[in-house]
Image (cartoon, rainbow, N blue to C red; front, top):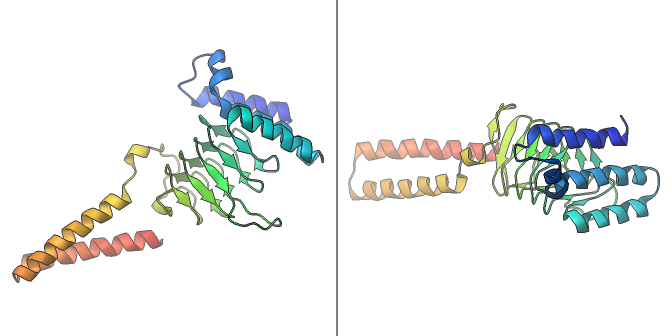
Length: 234
């Protein structure tokens, strides 16, 4: 499939997947992510043909217009949709497979200053990267994986998993086709603080009176804590 066929497929993908799109005029003026990918495809072709400086100039101009920074050497598959798009950064050795969805403010960045080797992440087919997320280093986000908004991912994310937090931890596995509902993601910090408050209350009561029931409550909380720590290390 040629470059123009790929761009046409990128365009049609927006019509299929964005309910906010109402008209062609809307498409022209309100979808910088789509236009950034289209210009990337032209620049990538130039880069592969040896016109690297021209490719960089083209993507520099694209960055000024769309506020999206894509290195022309990155490898991007079919039907990438960058929704809203402002502030997205895609580094030089990034690999993005087909049907990936990226929201605004995402960085697919490196953690090494070495020029040789792969420095940026690989995003597998069907993955969803939430707004503001940072995926850093030569790691892989698996097929149909989901990254929560503002998460910082520095470790591998398995297929069909959901990862959230700073640093990101996997909280769900085996859910490939479920819709990504940000409002349904757990608040790990809140749950940890709730645990600590309840634990302190139980320990205070134990110090005040030797109560078997309270000891049982403390044992239940200890089991919850151990499960929480195990989940964080997985």
